[in-house]
Length: 503
Ligand code: HEM
Image (spheres, rainbow, N blue to C red):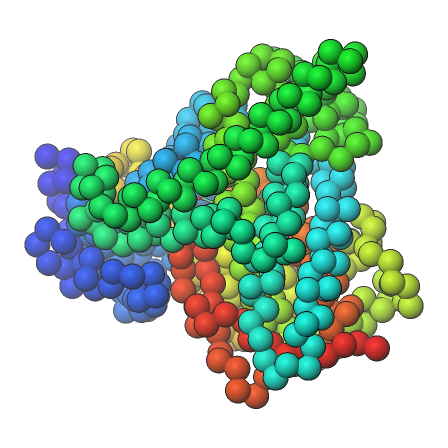
């Protein structure tokens, strides 16, 4: 009955070719490589609002600024779409996947961990791992070309593991440990299921070898995180019995049952993160758990898994595409180097926190990179109540709305020469007058990215450190980038570069 109603209300939408039962599943193709290209083609052919049935689910795909604003600014459309359910066995109901009141509570608890004064604690972790990256890249000097994305993946994984769990996994030094491989397999497995509507029912998926492999990888990842949590808990209880209070954060920062960011005068409270000693996101959650038991062991695992997932592939993707763009545009590389020289002069010192706002041009490069290659190329919401789009079509309750940022960011009505890489368009004067919601790499509205400041800090440090040590050169015969979206945007052919030492 519900499906019939949705069919009825959306019969006038533009649609690609549909078949009975499967809808336009085969128009999309059943692997990630074809899927994204076909989705972009459909946006070109059908326009900025169209409907597509994938088996029993209807997706309304939106890629213009008016509908993006309507959806993202609506406080009632906060529920993630059906496809996010496939993340539940891995991330549970965490900040990324949860809904309604329990999402709001989590957001309030976790927000203080991303206050900029707290992020400063992570400078050392990012600087240290960027230097390991530089050391690892040494072996590639002089080679005609190599894929730098393998190195960036391991570096960002080291950074996010140490920041979220407070534990070094040394992915860069151990090259590809089981944990790293399992993490990658899990992202791929979620997507594999999404493209195959016949695997949507749990009872079918549970019988497949894909599900058995998924469970195996899940166990590897969960076991590592569980061990970290247990060892942290043990250390904290030992510290407590020795008279050291591990949860001073809670005493001062609590209001209305929820941890607050400031003391009302805009000053940060004595959070675990605010202490001199470097803490991890996990420490904040453990503080709460000790205080009021708000997080069960499973919820802690889910939240750490979420940081690792949301904070790893995203920054990897952005750094990779930025390095590619810098390499392809020598004039951009020169300007970035000029800025670096102005900030650091002859010094070899790593950046300090107050150097980051000085990296204005590098910030423009990152923003322009995220415009052309947004790490999260689309997001989706479940429509929980009938809504009327700006164009007049009905968005019926029960369908999913997909916001296609990748196409939004290349709309010629919003950006002149939209396919051209031009960091200057993000210089202050040029962005004045830009429509709100025309640029959403971190999404927007209440469910925007909580980690965007951390991400910007990490990207600035890693990119500037690479440039300070190496000149990026386009290899004559390296393959060009080949973009696919496997939850996160990436180049299947890798990012091929040649590097030269800067004397
Ligand atoms: C270039 C880097 C990044 C990009 C482009 C990015 C982008 C996004 C986007 C588009 C969303 C919305 C997802 C949706 O609606 O389904 C999101 C949510 C989120 N991101 Fe990021 N992200 C980045 C880095 C990070 C980092 C470093 C962290 C953590 C350390 C993080 C943690 C999260 C979390 C927890 C959410 C869910 C927030 C909520 O629903 O309340 N992200 N991110």
